[in-house]
Structures are given as structure tokens and as C-alpha cells.
Length: 228
Image 1 (cartoon, rainbow, N blue to C red):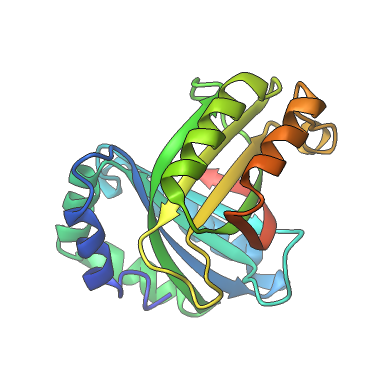
Image 2: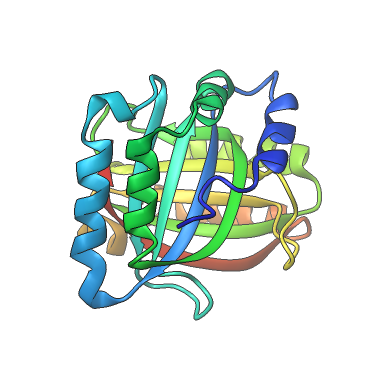
């Protein structure tokens, strides 16, 4: 985890283009052996469980990846907030406690990939309830404006209960061409396995309307381990 804050150039370039956006994220994946999973979770709990280690307006979520492609890491940590709050977080000097936290993590974690992006649309329950299971679907979109219009028109009326839906863009194109992501959040696995749109005919119409501008690249399912 030594590289957790390494891609600052990309990050601040993203911030400079976010005047019309209110929420952004940065993410870091890493691999942990099964025998060390509880140790890593405890390190995160011990550090971010202290209010003095949190930045106002920035949430921290730790996930374990389950149904995933072979090249996905085992875990992912995601920071979400406004551009202003995220800027404060990244500008803050690294004190001794942060350096110790990173040093301890490095004993059990192998760094994966980093990324950043912007939330474009969100639908569903707006309470503070934690939704434990997320399906993350990565896509290559060739006409982002048109896709967002169709996405919003469909999902604003067709999302089932106990579900949250987010559309976001990545600040840099991935090597596989991915430009956007969709996160479908479920309260639990039972909700995930029962998920289907309210109107399947409308779902087919929507899918047909975007098939020429959308290509799926990969997907994974992750489970929330902790949120601070």
C-alpha cells in the first residue's frame, strides 16, 4: 500500500475539470492473502475509526472483491467526496500515524491499480443505510451525453426497491477502453440475486437504445467490509 496516494497528477487534473460536478472518487486495489484479511481489516478500523484521521466531507469504504475477473485484486479502498473536500484530504501533510498505518499495511498488502472518476447520476434510496453488496460494471461509452440521457430517463423510473444505482465516468481511459462505470448497490445478497428492473419490456427497449454506443468491458461484485 505504499503507492496509495501516488497518482496525484491525474487526481488534481481531474479536480480542475469538475466545476459542474459535486462528487468524485479515488480508488486503490490491493491483494491480501486469506490468512491476513482480518489483520488488514483491523488496521483500517483502528486508523479510520478515529475521527481525527477523517476529513470532513470524505467517506472511506473498504471492500472485498468476490465474483470478479482473474486480474482483479482481492480488496479495494475508495475515497468519495466533493472536489473541495478531496483536495483538502490530499493536501493534508502525512503525519506519523498515517506513515505508521501505511507501513503496517505494506506488510500484508500488495498494491494493484489506482483510479479516479466523477459521479454523473445516482438513483434509489438516499438514506445513510449501508448497502453491503455492489455489482460494478465497467463500460466503454462512445457518446457519453446521449448515454447519460437514456440512462437517467430509464433508471429514474425503473429501479426496484432496496437498490441504489450510480453512473460515473473515469478521469482517464483504461487500457481496455473503459470510460464509464455503473455501480448497482444491494442491501444484501438476497436482494442482489432477486434483482430485476420494474418493467422488463422497458429494460429491453433501453438496452436496445444504447447497444450501439455501449460495450461492456468487465465486471465484479464486491462486499463492504467497513465504512468510515
